[in-house]
Image 1 (tube, rainbow, N blue to C red):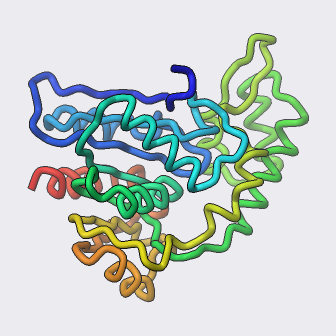
Image 2: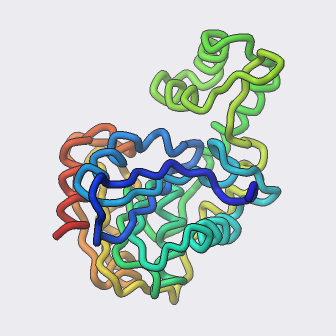
Length: 263
């Protein structure tokens, strides 16, 4: 079924009684960003489905990748793979999707992990600028990975972001290069990504929020909203980590999610 989201499935060597873990990456990311975490979970007997969101990675591109439509695509994936009871981990935009899914389909979600995002509204001005720069740069064409790197650095002027984006670069049939994500469609739907979850949304299941110590995506002022929407939640802060918590503090991050899922 070519409309079903692409994923990488990590199966434990022995049969597991632990609910499968769905991993949802952030904006402009891919399931490849979560290989080390996925492998570790599988080694600890946790089945993992690392998903490429719509308009990302190898998943289908849809005309309007809004929060609602992305949630629908993930639910289709869950039904297609006959996953009756799941755990969900979502980072950034993936965390926003995970929160909405848990609140709207609480009967199928056992535990929720939200990585460096709160249930509030966000300004997307920096993301808008980034996407516009990507679109402008991609229109110039890339003849090689090095060419793409040079043009991105010239436009974006940030090494870490450039290296992150290059993970989604691929060689086309005509030997030119392009991104697997659809920056134009994502730009048109930024207003959807910036919105808070519904004010009446509640998930009563166990929930872990993970915050990067150096990130401002979750602040002390967000605690009340988190407790309102997720009454059985707690916040774990990863020291010396920024927004890409699972990269900056991989060992502490992995330890925290394994304890939460298996405890």
